[in-house]
Length: 206
Image 1 (cartoon, rainbow, N blue to C red):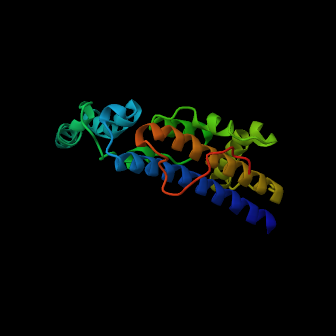
Image 2: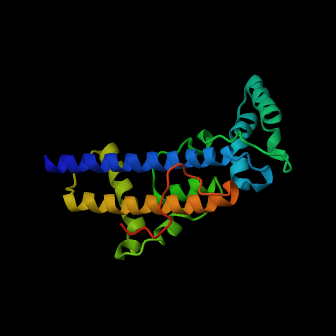
Image 3: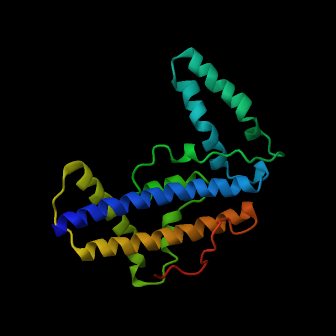
């Protein structure tokens, strides 16, 4: 019974980590939109991500009508993309998180690169001042891999309460660090701490 509860805890924790990361991306985009920034101040990766979906449809779809619709969208809805002297408050967070379904550290890094924040996992882990620093990324990777094994292969390997608590602690430290790294980098665009709630800018040492 206890092992079943611990397996369920691993699945839920991984799911919450995934949702947190997705929500932070959307919140970051909303924060940028709120200040109507100059297009020239936007990371090129973020600008490109806004148009990639339409480009894929335009060049990978065989249906002519669909391709024409995608090209029209690029011309009509994405004209701001080319105007460095203009401003923009129409960025979309949805396209950035499409397809994000596993919060493995390498995928988290790739996701935040789409808003111009590189190497976010390593930078977030680097904020931790405890002896956990060397294993945070390893434990988060292990958490997600075990979640996948439980969900897709019916893994029955024993998990302990200590395992679950360790995964929780490392996940919490990672997300707090990511929060600080992303918020700090966005200040260059938003000209102020971007999040609605006041959050600690100090070391992540829970």
